[in-house]
Length: 371
Image 1 (spheres, rainbow, N blue to C red):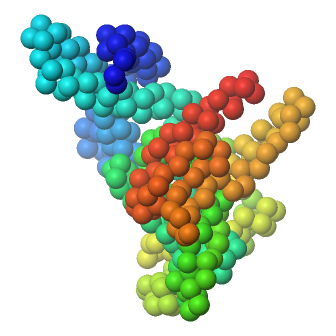
Image 2: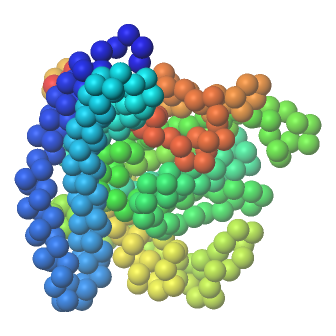
């Protein structure tokens, strides 16, 4: 931070934080927290488990966000005081401590600023993530499973609950596909930029000649549906199959035909769920996934119509977005934002916030240019 006036930098951070506070509406957050606390204290709330979990998750998120903002304001005041103290004492150690705190504070405020960029219609929703192995044979199936672990570890790092609805295991190794929910507010707004094809380059552990292999896996992210959403589904348009749940290598998860696969005949969308032991529960979860995918399909169709009316070309989100190279060198690079990391192991262990933050800014800029 040599050569940068900390006083000016503190003013700039204070202005940024004031803007964040205005966008997040702290008074509104206080009111929402009070309302949710009152609702969560109602013993009858738990008669509806889904509603109760939704209320408690929303309350926890708002309390965390409110504390995060107010603590940043307090830290900004503390760093200002620390610089004043260093100036009065003419103490190099105190100034060095203040410089370190200022650098950390700047990073934390920038991270929170990203949250204010998520203003899309569905950004505040929870997310449904589907990963499919693409070209690359057994390596692609193994790659799809690595991606599943990466996102689950990312969610775990942030304390976001997840629920795996369905996993289809490949014969030799890895998975053919998986669908899971990230049950946190703004999970969709956070993860929607991850939608697309992820490419892995490495020495294949499944090739006895040790040759380099390129594998692909596709990621689909859609918002979870809510009661206010209108998704018309005609029962006659559905083909519903039940089958026995299974794990890796065909090992039976249970001994009843409880897993459910639903095919929406007009669109060809297929969803499955096998995480519950009850066929009725699996059917309900599969229907929720189908509704989410149909809602996203409807949103994309409406966006395409608007683009046509404006005379704009449309681009596919199903294109390659990121390379993960493990051989002959090691790097992870996003093809849209240019963000890269030289430690793929940490990225595959869930450290993907830098990529996510950059793509949120990138998407917001693109949306602003179109507005």
